[in-house]
Image (cartoon, rainbow, N blue to C red; front, side, top):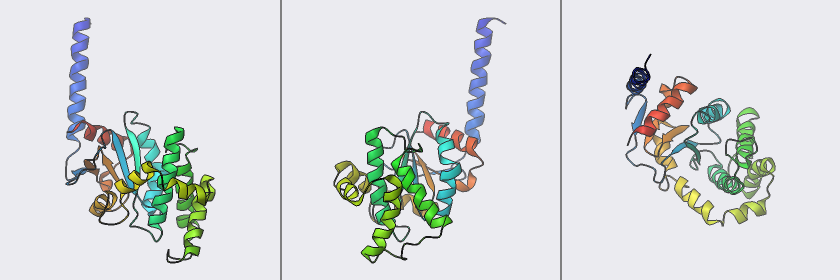
Length: 229
């Protein structure tokens, strides 16, 4: 086969694959375009989640890392939902501090060495597997301290480190981006559409989790959405 003919056939196959791949996804079924985009999100797969969400736990155990490994051109951004869970605000603050520390050390948030990941899974396991409730609510400092101790011990930092971290401008900006109530940030606005976990591509396209058919299919959908403008 001549080189020119081979190239033409390869190009034709490539175009056909893209066309078939694109036609497999449709707005309103597989995804929806957000009315209020999350700014500064090009190249990001943003996951809105909560420590007290059982499906968030399941996705983080079996799906999130596996999907992101198929997307080397994309970056993972966790966005904790402060309005969900009795200790949602405290969890957001601790997670933001730990993410900043991981970013400073160059540690991937999906790596087992990540301080953020260690704390996140400590809370998942305590809440969902062990049914820990840390006193039931955040109305007393004793309960708050009990809740924080789970994440602090798992990540290896102390309360002084946490308080110092909360003064960091990068941490403040992160929490402002996430939002600490229903009237601030972007996490709540995304979560109220279909609940959590919620995956957003490039800050514009929310994936309907009910339509996800597997890790490969989810990765292909993200790649497709990343091509949209």
